[in-house]
Length: 132
Image (cartoon, rainbow, N blue to C red):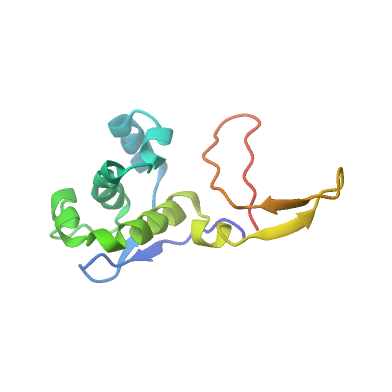
């Protein structure tokens, strides 16, 4: 799947809204979180507290919304799905599709190899993302 340039739809309780991240919005998030790696990290329950700020930064229409209001609207059981929607809008690749296992034969040792099972957050020279 190729990266998308279209806005991604999200509905966290305020009706369908569009997410799209520009260079300026990405720079603002990087300044707020210190690095893109910190912004994309979701390892504990506390990491979901950043989600309203991440969503707010990408909204194309913020009418009557603040990050705090978004946080009040997001039900915890939906947080992971909204996070995946954010990653899709931010990177252009839907991580829900990357979770699908694609098994290929390794040419070196004929061992099955899983492709596209993890999201790469690498940036810079030599970085590569595997997209199915």
